Image (tube, rainbow, N blue to C red):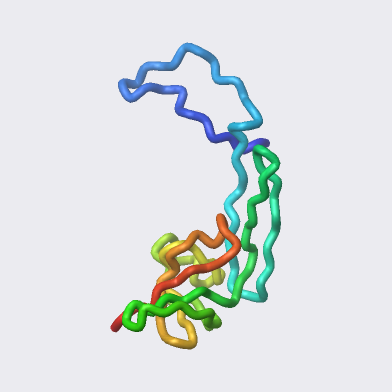
Length: 127
């Protein structure tokens, strides 16, 4: 069954929209990509307009920003410490935006969306 991104058939007042909504290819959605901690692996999809979208399936490095020195560097991700999106994602080693990860330089928060882009940006947390 297709995943569609349609508006609700109900109004805010509880009434129904009369006009039937027709399924269109442009309204087609997709399954979420759960980026795991592991050797870097990505997948390229063709999207509307003939463009490409990169989905990150697994990653073990992050572009780390240090707010004190104001420098960027690529560091290895050791493990996932906490994930506010879902506490079970920590056990499954799933990276999402807002996840706290342990790196070579210390703890960092992921600021990008790994399933939507082909890289992971993180900011070093000051303790």
